[in-house]
Image (cartoon, rainbow, N blue to C red):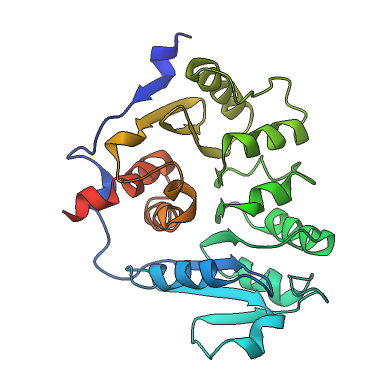
Length: 267
């Protein structure tokens, strides 16, 4: 197959984009998981952002080590924590994630083997109808045991190229990603990888935002968006991706593009 058959280059939003189809009534439930005793502000801001959108519920679960440190919020819940203040395994953690349409793993889980086991266990137990968005250090966390995770149809891996290196290595994938590679070999590897695994990949390389799903690759020049290489990972893009995917679960790549061009739609 020639690259032109699976590689679509996108320059700007179009009139047929689903970014114009935001629901008028609140729909869907998002569970946000993340945070530890030292860091939880990103998770709180992400939840606040999601609750400004037409979503039926967007609730946040934090480790209970934070419970006495935060004011009461109607959208924030707590689950058992480790001695160091990150998530421990609990039925609260599991049930919170299972009782949603989309689970957004926002990050800040900290480097803790107990938390690692707890989060990986939750991801593996999520059902095939649920959408799973993994961002920031969640991607590093799953490299301890990726089997049974990459096979999930509705998984979105929001990962830097360096993180993808680790994921591929953990999955024993025979093709290696090098940060020094030009764009075309990266495209080819992601094409073949997503033919082997049903997950969706979002990454960035050589000024190109890249999405890969079922062997189809879409690239968008970052200069044609309102993002910088830093704000791709640190801002609210993952929240927007979560929202559009919640509303359009059968069109994940289109949902990601709608999220990327969100600000253009707002103008």
